[in-house]
Amino acid sequence: MQADRDRTGAIPTFLHATHPMNAKIVKAFAPRSEEIRTARQSMLLGCSNCRKRETDKKFNRCAKCKEAWYCSKECQRQHWPAHKVFCREVEGSGILKLVTTFFANRVLNGCLQIALIQLLDLFDKKPSEPPLRVQIDVGIEPAELTDFMCVFMGQESPTSHEMARGGMMQVNTITPLDPIPSSELSSSRADTWRTGKELNGPELCFGIIEFCNGESEHRILFPMSRLETSLSVICR
Image (cartoon, rainbow, N blue to C red; front, side):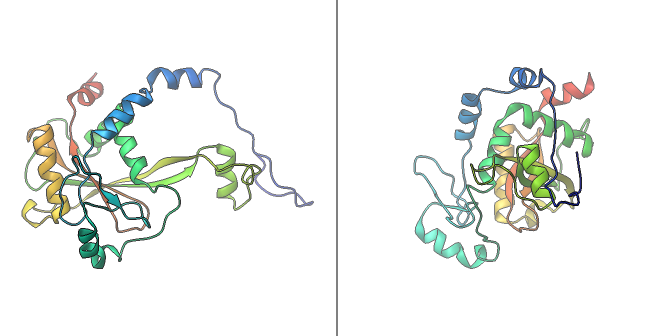
């Protein structure tokens, strides 16, 4: 890879190669798209204001940030004073769809489980008070290496005018947070903690996963549960 422009001002050329079996290996391990779609559809959204769960009635999302959902116009109006502090306009569908797709993918979810078990030393731990908390900072990067390098070096991609760049979610950091007693959790975190124990059992739910995007204060919350299948992979 040529890192700098030459004296004529020509744009560097980026070359990369992948293993010829790469596509077949990924296809062999990757869940089918129908499986991921079904898993995503089973995830219930919560109203950002009243915490009501989405069932038959479809919720409306904030058209600006794409990350807050409301069961009614009245809830959206009531929540605006708090939401406007964090609401930022984003391109496309935002990170919510990417995060839920990540969680719905059993392979990626399993890799995250393994990382959390090792990071938080959950091998022999049992859930206790206060609930554990971890923050996962994610970003959206170009899927093609050539596009990524052009963006990284502040250059124009050769294909940027021909078609939209494909993107992928990148996990930047996984950071343990200070525990907070469940009695002092915010309503959204307390609801996530309670739902996790109801769905996965109190013996397997350890805390709360908080996805964020850079410096944004907005959080997408999931219960942190230990899957025995992930534990068995580590112990082999």
